[in-house]
Length: 401
Image (cartoon, rainbow, N blue to C red; front, side):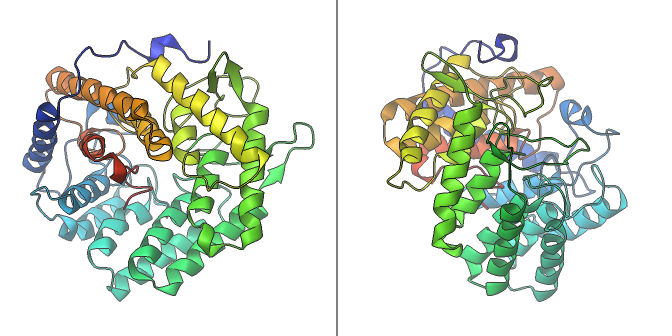
């Protein structure tokens, strides 16, 4: 099979109902705001504590206070009544420097950059804050990472968002420097003919395929900033990426998926945003269409990959974006945006209803919410909103700031 059934569960029988969805968004917002601790953080969920050295407060964008504050900013922009907590970022940042989630690093999801972004988004003309953010961005450029969590492509998402918001040239310059680093370190394997980056994230050196650490995620940000790059680069990026995905795909009937990475002893076929089918879709669905064999091939791969996400069903890991039902649901929303076919929106909304039930069950099981952007309820709230307004759908903290 192209997915592990043990990682998935049967889809809810509950039909889409906006009268259920809107109150759930409001409930999540209220839960987040009521649970804020005096230390400018939220209670760490037991499932997040499993992934860190201790169960203390978390600060970074991925599973900490900065991501939750950023999520509230996004929901505020959508018209929900929320407290502006961007003023807490100074405390969050200092707490991170004293006791980081993983280590003190400059990157987007688990480092300084992701913590500082909500503050800078609230005060884009703050020169001192801008210099601090620019320093973090510059430090990622030469790292041997080439991925989103801590590396160049994560930095580039933030730089591009700030350039689009402010039109200030230094953000554009940082994006271009990141793009050059990616292009200079994109290597073709002579045996397989695949174009891949060797990422050293979390220690091991691996060549990943997915949206978080691999070729799909890197191609995504390069193509999002296509107007800032030489015209010749765009066709090269599309051809290299689609060719590599085609060479590495695992197919069965009308379904498609990819292994975690190239290592033959790591043959997991995951169906998540971070690794596997769902993230391949969200990363590649907005690829500019060019008159080429690769564009037609990508259309076929995306349809087969989206179908795999549907047939696999919701993830048992919960309602979150990174490795949960919301992240997989975003694959359907991106395909709906791309094709206009109602089937994809209907599937996204069905996953939304399932994610609500998962969230509610989790609150009862653990006696608390999961107050995070990427792994918990804050990200779910934004996904639910996007299921109501699918034209606005974009993964928060990455494609949406």
